[in-house]
Amino acid sequence: MAELTQSEIHPFIRKIETIALFALSEAERAALAALPMQVAVLEPYQDIVREHERPARSFAMLEGLTCTYKTTRAGKRQVMAYHVPGDVPDFQSLHLEVLDISIGTVTPCRVGFVRHETLRALFRAHPRLVDAFWRATLIDAGLCREWMLNNGRRESYARMAHLFCELLMRLEAVGLAQGNACELGLTQPELGDALGISTVHVSRTLKELREAGLITLSGGRLAVHDRARLAAAAEFDPTYLHLRDPKTH
Amino acid sequence: MAELTQSEIHPFIRKIETIALFALSEAERAALAALPMQVAVLEPYQDIVREHERPARSFAMLEGLTCTYKTTRAGKRQVMAYHVPGDVPDFQSLHLEVLDISIGTVTPCRVGFVRHETLRALFRAHPRLVDAFWRATLIDAGLCREWMLNNGRRESYARMAHLFCELLMRLEAVGLAQGNACELGLTQPELGDALGISTVHVSRTLKELREAGLITLSGGRLAVHDRARLAAAAEFDPTYLHLRDPKTH
DNA sequence: CGACCGTTTGAGGATGTTCAACGTTAGTGG
DNA sequence: CCACTAACGTTGAACATCCTCAAACGGTCG
Image: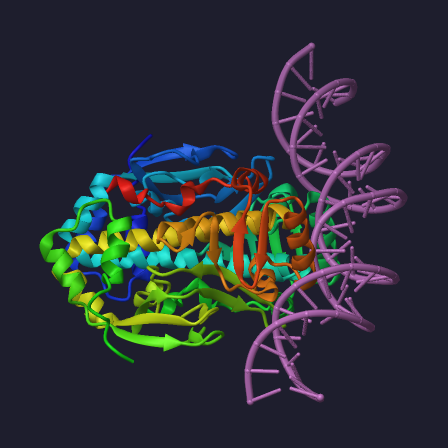
């Protein structure tokens, strides 16, 4: 555990600035920058929080990739969402006593924990920030709904294309993609858990996408070769991501 | 359109009381009771709000059943959630400019609209209520995640059992079920859209559940004959609903 | 009465699963 | 540096689940 290095922008400020519908005041920005945060370094395949726990803090993603998931009693796993740097995946725990999901790392990660009481004090002092964080949780809920449509009503080819579109766009939005390619660190078993299909079928679907010249995925690195056709195959409409063009603000 | 009749408890008070982690003060209760609300009566299969709209008000369910849904371009529909009396289905529109979902009636309904500016004024005057409503939206997000696990990782038999368990419990919680039975008004095509399966397969699955002695569904009326076995088949754990026993408060 | 919708059932077919074998890659320790 | 291991990735074959098409029955409503 260590404090945040000085050079980094506080992830909460970054998050709020890309999400809030208003501009931060100096007082709000200062309060966010002063938020005490404990930084932890985590290895792949570690749970950060687990279903049925009652955490006393939330965390922000600083580096790496994590996922939210649930499992059936039969042991089948469903990934609900991936989280990229800048996200605050378990904000819900601030208001829901018992966690209904687990969040685990996919790749090596750095995350920053902030105590719930600290956040509550922040919100008391700066009520407008509540709107911004509330909005963030509503956007996350929107992603969940889009995944539900995707997994429920599209077949594996379009489904996988859709996931890749989303991940590429979200990583681009935080500056972690270059030239239609990005580092995901996702293995095929994990893709299966996110898309609700078997590992074998992931391999076949991936092959189809590859042979169609849309993407290649190797060593966890996603390269999109024909972005327009990938989006078309996925019926991808990025509105639900509520990303704002970084240049426009 | 008409005002709310005097005899009804204001749905927002009911909602908050079953959801908030604190007891309402007299001032808060009075403010909620005074919320101006426009009541509308709607027929089955009408959209209340539609994807891509920017509504200036949210609504509370007073009577009937509505559903949140999205469609693919191919016209396939995925129902994301059902809403029973007492719910406030589109609270998200308060913070998300553009709707990412449509909400339509399933049965004849009465709903009460409240303008967003009214709600914002309420929250400025009574900041504690924000926590309660925020919590409500987080609980809804939890339902969405449970549906995702259900639709992604359970097959049709368990999946349908799970949906029936949820609906029965939620209707019981608002006093709309008697003796393990309730009025749903759901047709088989609609069940298919919620479960992500075809109408034909709904019919067959329903038959299996019926022949196993678990439930009967006819004329939109659900009767659960063996609740324990239905819950077991569904791996149903009601924690995610965050319902509180009405007797304990 | 006819039209329409929901429901049921059958038959054939598509999508995706499971089991199994094998190749590939990366890490570990001698 | 090599052998060993373990996980991921690929491919084939048999099978399950679920879909589509189609036909038939029943209720409801104009």
